[in-house]
Image (cartoon, rainbow, N blue to C red; front, side, top):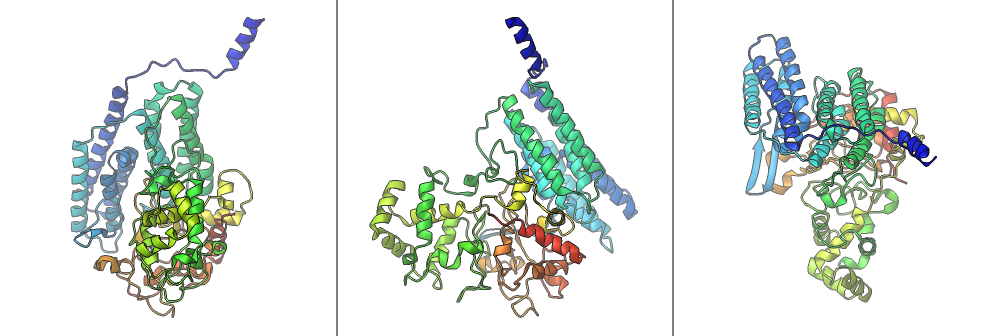
Amino acid sequence: MCLFLVSIISCKQEKTTSYTKVDNKALVAKVEEYYSHHIDSCIALLEEIKTVDEVSEKIKKYKLARRAFKLIEPILAFTDKENYKSLNAPNILKVEEEDATDIKIRNPFGFQVIEELLHEDKVDVIKIKKTVKVTVNRLKLIRANNTLYLKKYHVLWLLRDQIARVALVGITGFDSPIMRQSLKEAKANYKTMLFIINTYKNEFSKERLYTVWLNELQATQKMLQKADFKSFNRYIFIKKHAHKQLDLLTKTAKDWKVEFPLTMAFNNNITSFFSKETLNINFFNDYHQLENAMSEEKKALGKKLFNDKNLSKNGIMSCATCHNKDKAFTDGLAVFPKQKRNTPTLPYAAYQQTFFYDGRAGSLEGQIVGVVENKNEFHTNLENLTETVKKDSVYTKSFASLYGKVTDFNIRNAIANYIRGLGNFSSKFDKNINQKENTLTISEINGFNLFMGKAKCATCHFPPVFNGTVPPNFTETEVESIGVPSLKGTELDDDLGAYNLFKTEERKYFFKTSTVRNVSKTSPYMHNGVYKTLEEVVDFYNKGGGQGLGYHVPNQTLPPDKLNLSKKEINDLIAFMEALTDE
């Protein structure tokens, strides 16, 4: 009887594979061969653009070259991030400002530039040839130095990054602004991911897990193959496919017995892009090496400091004076008295790489210095701030316990850690896309699909935080020039934004892209508070920003073309944004 029961139990257990394990070097060599082959194809197809005369034929060659590029993208973007970014850069000047003595302005090249050149009213053949040549030379350089060093955890990170790149950036049309080939190109990405899973077939101990992977990747390709850019249901794609693939990655890590040596921007073993557990807050925190950097006790201390008016020179202002928690930590004013710009929201502020509207601070701790020293805010200095805190015996005791002593940095770190704890991905949208409830209306789902598609919002407000920090690496927070009107509404606002940092001409009117989360509570909008309603904001974008309104906006990064959103589409878009309000 015991043997009989064991037999039954064994039959019910999941079938394991009997594959022969392959040496990791051999697996990586196979991936490298695939990678090299498609780099060669990409180079050859780009070269062919110069050999045909008709623009229509050049476009055909470009499409084929672009597909080859998308086949190598999952590998290239992971193993050579900077070259990938250059080859896939938008057709705008790249400005790099380390300090006033180190400012670099680079002309873009690569696929997006070629795509736009091919679709100009008057095609500049010479310029196309030059851009193709630079692009080919960069690919040849990559080809000559393409030895891959991949361990199993690298492979899982590579797959995760590409799943994120497609779901959070690719399907928005971010890197195919003219031809809108993003969905077909995503299918090419998935072909490479399928190749990688097949290459590592023998690493699976559970045959069923490998089979589920195959079925899922094939189903995803099928959905993308049939997709139309305007009508594609991005909500379902992420909810039913991207999130399922994240879950499969988690199961694969366990099946392969992978131990991750560290955590990047994404936490390891995530199963959703829209969860409090998705992003590693320490990745965005310069001071995460501090012991218990994000402890609840430090956040509680920070909250007390945040609400303490005694920290200001005259004892009349605290952080909470401008950042009201009932208004998602804004103040409801266009501009706070004697200030120049609108009070920004604080939830999710931690998930960015630059701070203030002009990006002049590199951390929350650094931003707090600006508040302390601003004569229209705390109007004091770090030394006086420290002495004020030291005079309070309760504070002194808390700092002694949590930090060892009171210093200006420790004060700022405590406040910053409180801010880092704001924003918990608890909105109606988050709960629905994570399948915790089924309450989103058709209008709200349509609004998300518009936000991620036709309305082009997500090409600047990147999910999951819906701010300017670019996934999947999250190492850059974008600044944009969109041409915001003055409060009079008849001319371009005279605030020069990021230009004021180093007087870089190409940075005039550039401002950091803020989060759209909790936007229903953060009116008025824009850096100067010019718009009181979301309807006004959407109308501004619908008309093509400042240039669409007829203003002279040098280097505007927002396309000046009208979006042609209908009244219903505008209502749907706003309904979605309102669904991003946290509990």
